[in-house]
Length: 443
Image (cartoon, rainbow, N blue to C red; front, side):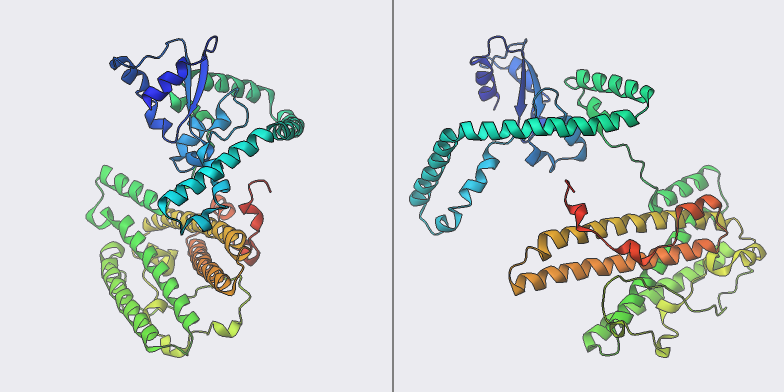
């Protein structure tokens, strides 16, 4: 690669001081290119030639997210709208003969591929004029449309921000060769909501820093374990309701194993509650059964989701675990455990953030499946497989919607503030509907 690039840079390059190279792994290859050339006796590269590294648009999306703004052709000034790919653009031509080439011997296949590519090159040569004229018309129309869109955006932006953005853009473009990270100015700056794990880690670090009492040292992990148990309860409850009364022996055995495992987790959690809630807590109290709102936007028959019968009254998925939100604010105060309420509120916020993030991911995945799998299926087998994938994603949507509804219900018991009420609003059934337009970047 080094030899090929050095020789190409010496051929017919008089008066050219700037070149753009595209390579699949240019983010790594270009780092020490000059050092390798200087250390070799057989390589020579003129110092006056500025080489700007780039990665083709087909490959850059398989890299880290940071590589997109640093090496994609969309952010290189002065090169126009190009994809930076060569060989990959020829695959569509080869797809025409791929079925016939599968059964050929190696020499026959090589001759067939050579003939196909020679024909492709000949067609490009005789159609070059028409192709360039078509691309020129598209480019002119694109300039007009892009200019109108840019003018609308420019008119809406404040003057001081436009001045600041222009300065930051010039600084990024001038520094990209020596410091590719300067191009991160183009990256979307979205502050992600803290997850439950991040909040738990922060609470543990704060507890260690102030030398908390032994009964309060691991309380954040204890509450987080309780939240995980509640999620497992909801998942098992949904599975039991979907299974209905007509279940197989294998299904009943799987449910029994899950209940046994869940009951063990609940027993351990309840025993730990005596340490964190104090002597005022009685583990033998009989609170109300767990009330979970199941959200589902499928047009299924309601009879398919059988209601929980009286036989499951003492099942672990219906057991209320001793979290501060289940005990109530007044009882926590009597147990001298009022300081646990803000801790659970923080962890509930992280749980809600995680659930909303998962909902967005699964809903987008569902929209993409409709565009790429369901609508493209041409046979009964492909349709069955596609709808099976959609059903699997929909079950995940229903699970996370139920977890969010339960999380918000528990947050209401902890006397949330106005900001939390505005941030975490009730989840409506209409909000679980999706549009396939999210799968089209030009929609």
